[in-house]
Image 1 (cartoon, each protein chain N blue to C red):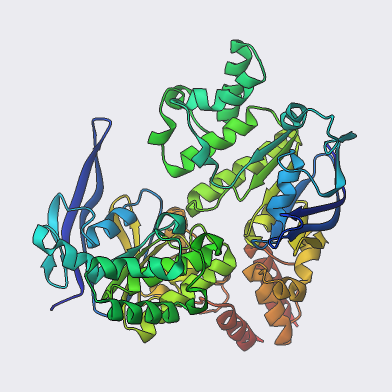
Image 2 (cartoon, rainbow over the protein chains, first blue to last red):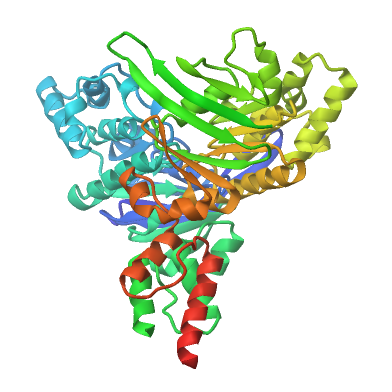
Length: 278
Length: 287
């Protein structure tokens, strides 16, 4: 296997009101096993369209997408691909199907034809990973947004995927729920070695990624480590994306001739650097 | 339009095992033309509070007086309340239902019994306020528009009622940074132009800091803190203890103080921090 995911020169075109729209324009991305990649961009930049290509919900108009060496265009691969690359969406309410938490988590493995003993094991394991085991007999509709989203994640983990694609999983959550979900995602990557592709508007969620990809108008416009990407303050502002406030401040101070490193990402780094000037 | 909330208590499912006190003896006064930021966690009571303000739910006890009219009085017609107090819900675009943008925005004014001409004027004005092109979009289906545009159509539908009090419940949730900044900017312009009373519910301290005159922090059904943004952000330990953040810049200033660098205390924008730090560094050089 070369990469977990290989997107090669993919173009995606569709029709809206007789108008041809190109949502992806000749995009190529490789994601290694165990990597944590964050994709940032506007609504309409093509990031969700790209995500849907990775588990064969959409097929490229041109180019190809390979998941663990399986071509998404080959229909016989579809179920294997969806088991390999799980997906978590924005709205937790649209992803929960059962009336009891553990039944919801069991839904995926049941459909894979897994034996009941194995299902029991997987459900408990998945709920432990997302830290929701004590809620296993509760009704999902009584949980908070962050908790519901973690149940949705457990449902995906129970399928034992190699890779999970998160499509704005925190957009509808409050700050507490957002933290719960982000911590769960980090844990899946570090402890379970699951490859993560995380799509978000929130810059601060990208700080811990191995790599950040910025999309605009169906293309990749910036790519690199969080430090490399965030220090492109001017470019990100032109794209209408947020920069962490301290990074913005460091950039402004450098412009005024203060000698600071341009790649400050956290409050602690800023404090350290400023104290050095003291 | 002034709002006076007196000893408001709301209990959900009273006398049942699910009994929850969502609001606990809350008293708040809001002056005519004030721009209020309402902050609090999920479950803090802020949504319950704003639903009282246009009569969607009735208090278990207490009163709400809007311009000398007690809206909790059962003899008050709710139409009168809703003409004055416009409420934009979370994810308001989920409530769009008409075939065209025009019809959707006209729905409220139409139900007020206005003439065709008046309705058209109001739709035009409301679309202008949220920066949607009347000529290009009025005949389009709202469902063909982008997320940010749909949100604006929904907000226009409330503005077309010309409310004297406008309440927005997390109007930027789920939007990307560009749409978020556009909508907040339009709310600001609207406030400057009409000097109406606005209550903005948000989780984002950074957004609130930039816009509002006064912040009200709710926690467990009570008002935990209130005051100008500068005053509220000074209470960072209280805010943190109830799980709310302060703007990153304010946090930076606190940390600098701990490290022995004393700069101004009430700083929460990048601009202000830049000025302070430059003053500090240049001051030292000259010394």
